[in-house]
Length: 89
Image (cartoon, rainbow, N blue to C red):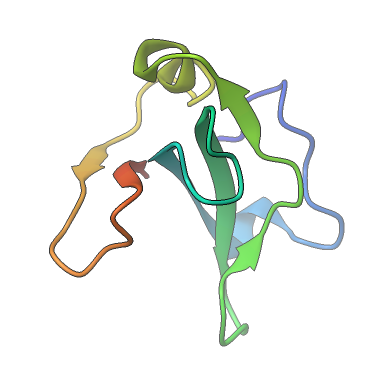
């Protein structure tokens, strides 16, 4: 379920997509913030579809507050971008 404060992505039926939220610790594009980026793994698409508007936070706790309740947390995995802290499914 997509949190109500995140707008739906035009043209994507939620029934055809797995939504993921990835929390980053001060990535290169936002070096002074924790960043939550939403992307969709969509049936029929080769690549993930990225949301264009990330959410910025001052702490990990605040970043987590942007992630909808009830999801599974996958910690950073070997080979992930070093700025990734965790991904929520």
